[in-house]
Length: 175
Image (cartoon, rainbow, N blue to C red; front, side, top):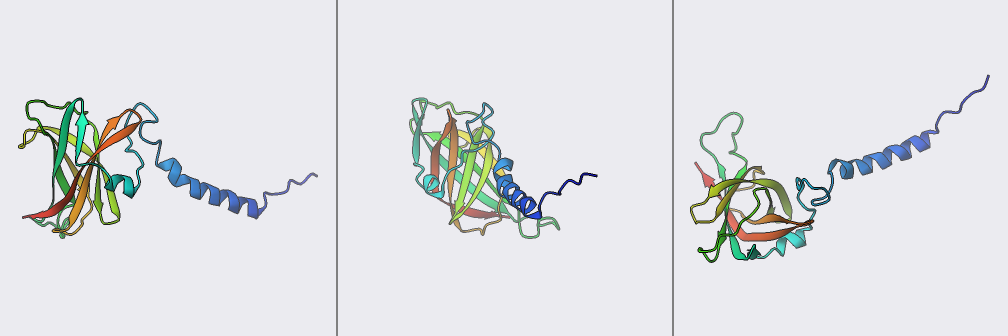
């Protein structure tokens, strides 16, 4: 009778470690722009996000971002005894109101709170009160009201994203 040697336990441990280390990379999916779906935000460093400009030229129009971020504390429910998750509205406003920039409907947002970064997707709502295009997000972290954050918008542009920032927005408290 021929006996087959089992796989040594050392090899199993090594394979397990490799899979555990590789799993987060595989689970993260493809980087932004590597496929045609544009469903993934680009992977950017904190320094790249902090360096985002306050104005950007999109299709010939210079635009700026005006962000409002808040957490809602009324009414409280058993599900939200400490207020809602972070929400926000961002208006992409042309600096020359006679020339409207056309922006894609699918945009990304990064909210920077110190060294913490939250990433989300923006939903197009239409024309905002400032005359620009309004985008909204929800589901953000429960950071303290009154604290300052940088709001970075990513506008898809080929295999990367053009960035536009509203630096120093205050998280408001609504009741």
